[in-house]
Length: 250
Image 1 (cartoon, helix red, strand yellow):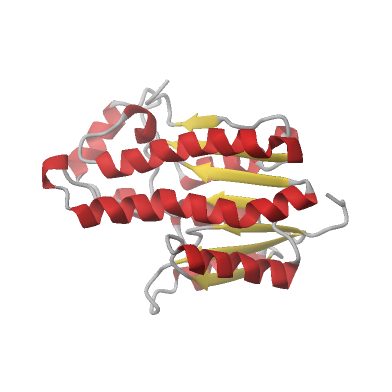
Image 2 (cartoon, helix red, strand yellow):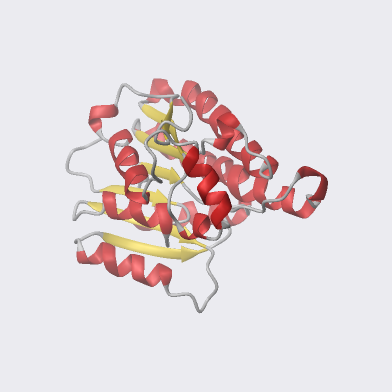
């Protein structure tokens, strides 16, 4: 990759939480960020993320689309390439939960979680892979979860989607390595976000008792690992799942 080229990063689910923290960790004058979100039209989170990144001198665009929609993602990435000429970094962060015990789980809740959490990773990675291999440079980071490795009652759909991300990461890393494209995953544990804030207090307390460090993580903790994995210092790391969970899973 030419040193004078301005890097372009695509981040899914970037309007809030871990996605926003990742954007803020990467945001700098030499980077263009394009992120997606699927917030309601009246929601202002995406606009807030854009303003925060612009304040750091980063060129940024936010686009509302469903990353589970294969055709929409193809058009989204094609638009990025038309406007900016390249994609150097892809962070697959978008995710949802539809938690309930297996015997109560509806098919629609299984399908929705697998579509947003796992199919979107396929959609977005496939859409950028040809460009990354052509330019012989790329960094892909997929956000998995500790429950993909250890499981969690009431999250069969979520755990399956995140375990799928781990297997996908290792397979695609092998496919793209010869073209200087690295593919890694970060598997956070209990991170304080709007999503986890919705959990009942007893559930939060139960999680904390499983964490040797005795505290929840912050979105910025995840963002710093992502920032490292896309850096040149991590150029010899590929196909790895980096666990970030305070010792909850070892």
